[in-house]
Amino acid sequence: MPNNNTLGKNMQIQTHKKVYSPEEYLLLEENAEYKHEYLDGEIISMTGGTTNHNEIASNFCAYLKFALKGKSYRVFIGDVRLWIPDYNLYTYPDIMIIEDKPIYHQGRTDTVTDPLIIVEVLSKSTANYDRGDKFKFYRSIPEFKEYILIDQYQFYIEQYAKTSEDKWEVTYYESEESRLKLTALDFEIAFSDLYERVDFNNQDE
Image (cartoon, rainbow, N blue to C red):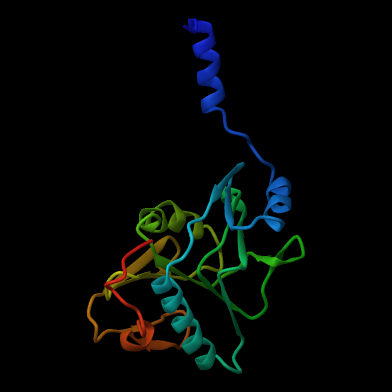
């Protein structure tokens, strides 16, 4: 039977977490099979997307890019990383809209710093994080003015719009007949278009 000293050592081994530098994370991420978030030294695996998640993000981007054609906005989906220096965070929002040209972090064209609007499609495993700490992290970005949370399991959207310094207004959309209208730019989309081909009976993650 192990003695108390041995148990103590084992407990230390089990609870110790490796702290990674941002440079180590970026190097590991270049060769990783799946995406990871980096938060102040910790590397966190990101959950995979469902077909409903993918349909919603694709629909939103398709209508948005058509509406913004010829205008000074850029739309990025999924694979473009966001750097938030105030919280030492690298993450991958589902959709980012940037006004004019992206500001790249350390000259890396895979990492931006200046989204005007961020859209997240909610998952069961990440909804609380997206509404809580992640929104707090996003609010530290000076250019950030609008946050859209889209439910993939029902007709439901939460829209957070910055009205003044440190003040945000929330609007809820809960009907199949709803239309989401952005406040930070001229764009509107019907739920029938946003949720096209989404199957609410398919609830697996």
